[in-house]
Amino acid sequence: MMDRIREGSTGLAVKIILGLIIFSFVFAGVGSYLVGGGQPLAAKVGEREITRNEFEQVYQNERNRMQSQLGEYFATLLGDPAYVEQFRKSVLDRMVNDALLDNQAQDLGLRISDDQIRQTILSMPQFQKDGKFDEEIYNISLRRAGFSSDSFAAYLRQDLARNQLVMALESTEFTLSNEVQAQAALETQQREIRTITLNTADFAKNAKVTDEEITEYYNANKQQFVRPEQVKVSYVELSGNSLKAQAPITDKEIEEYYQANLDKYSTQEKREVSHILIKGDEADAQKVLDRINNGEDFATVAKDASQDIPTAKEGGSLGWIERGVIDPEFEDAAFQLAKVGDHSGIVKSAFGFHIIQLNGIEEPTTKPLAEVSADIKSFLVDEHAADAFYSLQTELAEKAFESPDSLDDAAEAVDAKIVTSDFFSQADAPKALADSAVLQAIYSPEVKEDGLNSDVIEIAPEHVIVVRVEDVRDEMVLPLDEVKDAVIARLSQAQGEQEALELAQNVISGLNKGDNSVMANNGLAFAEARMISRNDELANDVYRLEKPADGKSTYAQVTDRQGNHVIVALDSVLELNDSNMSSQIATGLLRSQTQQDLTATLDTLKESTEISYPLLEQ
Image (cartoon, rainbow, N blue to C red; front, top):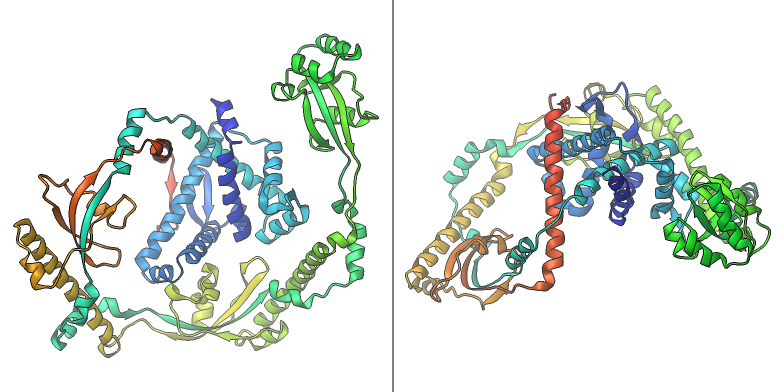
């Protein structure tokens, strides 16, 4: 079982998933994810503590991701405090689930070797250039994300172990042919419909709303027109990116860096080798070596005698190797061979006894300065900008503290402009101020009530901000005069929806009796018949309708994505039973079953684990 779990962690699917996960974490910046100790807790899962800082960082990353995907729609959702509360809870729940899986993986003894960590890092595309691992890109990426090489390896080890557990669940699932066939019949079924769309906006335009109705609605729903407490904020930003233009790099600096770091631009000597592995005793290996010494072809002997099954099929070929990546004893013997065609004696390693043949030599090379000059310049610009940033950050912090009643001195010290926002609430803060740490500072007593400058706040790697509150507007119910148009719009929409619904119901009632006079009197007619599948926007409702009987259509009222009422006539049902869909259906069923297993596993772990949510208890 354990072997299957460990083997599963090297699968292509897991590598793809991990690549996406690590990419989002490294370049969104979660260096604090591994930092704990002495911090307020968001949740505790057994002995595993999820700090408030960890949660806020992951929450902000998820919020930024959703914002980039959904744009203004997501900004609208964030205006609803209930949605924000639910969204924050969902993020914390996912972190708790990860912690449960981490604990379970540890209890099962799942382990990730240093070599697995190394190979995973080397294969991650975000650390590669021209298809090869680039140490400079790796170091810069980790630094910007707030990771050290050790902390990133620790995070990666934890994530790989967690996915071993998930892969173990997946490997135990299977589907039956009759299940797949039944599901395929449902999935591929098509339905023929005709529709009449009643546009509720058109009905709303003709709605008549009285002053009495407006006043009554306003008085009954004043909570809908509450303007939350708002603040007007001034701030100064400082970022490393903005300093890059101020970091000119000379050709001399580039050449000096190149000469001091030639090893970065040089390749090691590589050797193409084959080997024969004998796992018995040395006497068995000697018998094989005697065959080669007596003139037998190395590849032929390897296919016949080597116990390294994958390479034996290829005549023992291991391809190209370089120093520092394989067993030291094997490596030393391979690099001591003098010329192509030579073979070693018996070489002992942790895996058994080897006989090694040299097939090719690739001499070390060094890239010319012209080829790497642009990369070195980019690296040095980043380094100089980073040095300037940290120097200016210190100056910014000192001036903001020394002159707490104004940002003028702080802005002058770092040659930045003071930006002043319009009034906003926590739910609709502008992008530059929406970071949770920034909002926490803005609404702290020292900043909001005492009018002092905030401390320097890090909102991203090499990106900080200092804020001060210029003015505050208390929460209040907006007067009717200011929201009258909004009240009229809501009443008109509600009236329009009701009128459209009543018309749809009257049309359907008449059609079920064989009477289409309501349609005729309102100038309505069905659109041409069309076939729909399960991915149609009306599918959820249409596929719930009973199949037409005796050639008679089935009628129903449904709602489309725009909120319009739609009269549907279901004329026929077509069973396709497409056998070509079986593989896809089977994969979908397997995925669903695996998810159910994972959910059940998490439920079981939750029952047996003490979990607390200090963040939600505040």
